[in-house]
Each structure stands twice: as C-alpha cells, then as structure tokens.
Length: 516
Image (cartoon, rainbow, N blue to C red; front, top):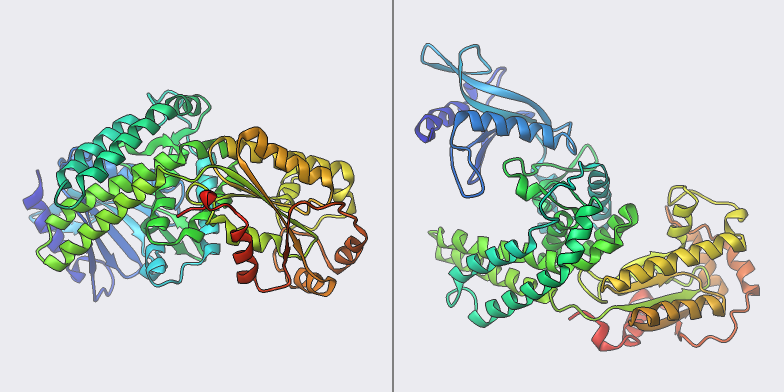
C-alpha cells in the first residue's frame, strides 16, 4: 500500500503554499477512507490507501478509477459540486498540484460549501424544518425516477444476507453492549420478515425498482447549496451497496431522521416521496428496510466505541448503538394497518389535523397521507399550487378523485401501513366507500368529522399560502348549502386550537393502532 507515500502528499496538501493564489489557510477533514482539504472556495478530496472487506483503495490506479467514478456518479445529483479529477505529480523530487510530472496521487476537486448547510448540522441545531425535508425528498424522488434500472441484478436487495451479516456483526457486542435476548429477538424477527418479503423483493426487481442509487443517503450527505437541497457523496466503491431497491436507499434517510427523534420530518419526507413516485407498493418492505439500516448503524458503532481513547466518548457511542438496536426492533413490530378518514367542510382544518395524526399511526414513519386536493391536481396534470376553475370540480372529476383516493388507500393498507384520507367526504356514499376500503383490507376504520363556524372556516382558507386547496371565502359560503346527510363519524369541534383538536382525535383512535 501507498501509506508512507501518502504521508508526504498529505503534508504537501496541508501547506497553503502548495496552492495557487494567496492561500493563507488549509482546513482538513479526516475520515477512515479519505482526507479532505478545504482551500478557499475549493475542496480537494484524497482517498486513503486502505483496504477493507467492502472497499479497496490500496493501489494508485484504483484510487484514480474510483475518483473518476465518484465525480461521474455524483454529478447525477450535484453537478455544481464535483468539478474535476486533479493529479498530485512529482518531478525532480518536488510535488505539484496538477503539474506535468508523474502522478503520485489523485484528487477529486469539489466546490466548497458551508458546513452549517449540511442537514445533519441543521438537525443538531434544530434548524432543519419539515419543509426542508420535503424539498430534499423531492430531490430523492426525482433522482430515483431517473436512475439507471438494473433488472439483471441478482436480487432486489440481498436482504437475507444483510440480515445474517447484521446478526454476525452484532454478536460481537453481545453481553457487553447489547442484551443477548434483544439480539436473538431481532435476528428471529428479521429472518421471518426477510422470508416473507422474498416474493415482493423479486417482483420489485422485475418491475424495475432496482436502480443505481445513492447508497449512503443520510443527513450528512445532503446540503443546502445555492438555496436548494443537494445530494452528494454517493457510494462509488462498491456497486453492491448502490445498485439496490430504491426504497432501501430512501430508508436510510428515514431511519436517520427517526433515530434523531425527527419523526414528523420523516413522515413529511416519506409522504412527499410517495407523492412524486407513487411507489406505495414499496411500503411493504419498509419496516425491514428501516430495521436493517438501524442494525447496521448499531454494529458499526461498537468498533467505533472500542477505538476511542476517551471512556466518556466510548460510552456515548455504545449508548447510541443500543438506541439503534432499539429502533431496529421497534421497526419490526408495527401497529396493524388502519384507515382514519378526516372529513369536513373546507377550512375546518382537515389537513392540519391529518399531519398532526400521521406520526402517531401505524408503521414507521407514520401514516400515508392521501389528500383529495393533491390527488385532483395530479390527475389533471397541474402543479400542486396551481389554481383550478369550476370545471375541475365537476361531479365526474370529483368521482375520479375519490376513486383514486380509495385505490391508493387500498394499496397502502395492503402493504401494512396506516392511511389518513383527507377529503371533504360530504356525501354519505363517499364516507361509506372509505369504510368499505378498510373493511376489504381487513384494517380498522375511524371516521372523524370536523366542524367549525363559517367565520372560522373563511378566515382559515384566506390565510392559506402555497396550498393545494382552491377553496376561498366564496367556496366556504357556498358549502353552507351542503346537506351531508346522517353523519356516523366522530364529530369534533375544530374551532379550537390544533393541539386540542389533535388530542381529541387521537383519543378517538384505538390505542392498538397507535405507535408507541
């Protein structure tokens, strides 16, 4: 390996005089596989001459090849960040950056960005909003929809092998870091899930859901750059980690959010992803995908703790490993699927309540939100916030909207997930048909009917900004003439603040359907 030679290169790249221009400072970031040198507006990333079971950077030619791959693959999502392949050369015994001598090392040249813009920094500082996560999820969805399909892959995700590998790695911490009975419980549950999901995994491979993904999609690899969330630093060194089911790729990001206690962020991200991809069928594998991602982080944390010289830091890493293990176990014991319908006239706060309830229901990261306003815009081929005229609300169009809502609810329920149907549901037939969807899926059903005064509803619709609903004050007034017929759903006074409404609504849902 070129470890000794790299020491000279690292010393050279750490010296401000090695760079063109008036460079006064070089900042350095070290990881187990790379060293990044931050110089002005640029960043130069050098791969360490290391070899692991999953990664081999030991030879100079391999490092050149993987630098090229890193640039090419990351330009799919971050073309502005990844600029060029740059050699460190030697001529007459002297090293030079991009010189004419013999290449002795290869670097990925990137545009530097502010570390405060990294999503993990934002999460730690409590500045990461659910809205930012929705924007990031849109980027992930677009990336997955355009990523290269690999139907020739041996498996959608080699999930049984991942489960078995996790079991072997976690065993190293048994009795010391992890309770043996917890490991046994996780291993047994994971294998049951893997065996049951094998047909779904094969079906998804055949249908093109195995694609060349990111492979390392967590908060530390998303950054706000020029005002937009950008995915970067994907896996380039091992195709087995990157050519995977798109939902296994996305599950890493959701797991990271849940581990940090950002369940509302995870739910918002998941629902935005589903709106863009329509991949409701992938939800069936999500509990196991989340569990595997958490289990991997659990066993990776154990050797990291053992390598610490500071006992306090080691204890923190071991505690985090146990938290990951708990998340892995919880993911495999989701509440049963349920359909909660939130109905009521425009301005009663249906969507706000649906979001508040979503993280409390069903399998992680919470309920699938199906909003009639969003479905209507999608069916008519317009943007979510585009305004529609009266023709878009003709009876035949609304019938299509409710039919699509029921069909999507059936798919999500069949995948084992909870659903919240957010629609006016003013007709008795609309309400009874939603209950029938739950019954056909063998899922529980809860109907909530929200009520508020005309003035309260009018004020709410006028306060909306960038919302999918087209309702205005005139629509609210016209709805006063609606006769909804006999309402057998739970009536809730929605004129109160959201916390009070959400508390009563949650109390209307059987405890067995709620997440712990």
